[in-house]
Length: 451
Image (cartoon, rainbow, N blue to C red; front, side):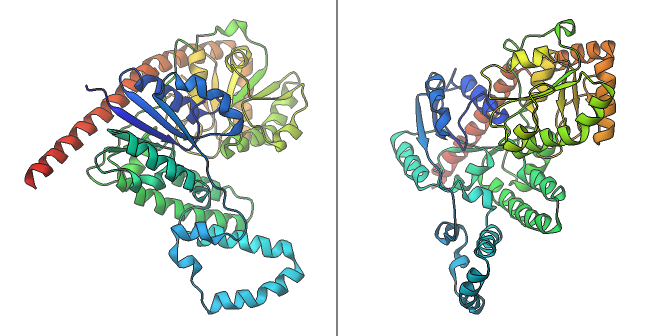
């Protein structure tokens, strides 16, 4: 295997504050052993102190900023939807009505503007926020300076830039999750019919987006079997869609015996800026916690992780419902807890937090959606429960049953060792990229000879 020059482009900076960031950081560490890595990434202001740590594994790090589309700014939207700016009789009527609506209700007019932008752009509204002139300039600069073998676009937000990658490079798309699945679940769980309609519009756009852009890559890396099947349907026949599950650093996540844990304590881990994690926390506190607390007065739940929402903070009481915010090391929180809870109802992909808990030997109880993509046997490796009532009942049973805790603890660690050792999974990822690179190089050589 030759030493490849790999450009990794990410919508989010690699760090341990959220699942995708941990996966990306581990990928960079693994690939840097044998290859030259350049990282082109967006970053939050509060993450800039993390750059020196990641620089240890990169030949170069280039930071870009993104643009947020606000107000009635149709210029950026028009980049993706040429017809948006076209005038018509309908738009003339809107222009005539605007002063009247503004006088009646400025708030109503602003909501109309937001709704129009969300539902007339060709791409999902969320992705438009990641259109960036700064990125385009910095990408052009780095691609001119270096002759890359591989360009890897991390996260769906970056897939829109696929056409900018030179044809000589192997084009890799690391999906993290099939957003079409995520958006469908979000739409189904919206509280009103109007919100459902808006979300289903975004779901349809995301479905179209993923079907179109999956065809532009040589390799699409999927994390779960369901995502792999989805992207195999989307991609071209020549596109490789390998399944490379998220793994964990087993040396970092040392097994913790059951006997050393606090009594009647549950813990959840996540970045709460990611809506499925926020929804899981609120769902647990509102629907499940009261049932468990009524039967077990000493019960306590701890929400560990970055960017907790105001809604979560309002529910915290500091005694039985605790919200920590970002912590440098999450392991002590998990190791002290009786149970790791995953009350996730939304989202897709694979939940690395479950694998981390299993590696530490923490008994896990999850919804079916939370455990999706992980090869567990319900009742043997983890507990799986659907619905608030069943989740509360299963959690109570687990909190009271030491032998069940010990069984899940041992089986969970064993499963993490057998299937989710990141060193092994990273080697598989490296092999997939290398084989696809060789195949593309041979094809290009053959094409050159024919010319």
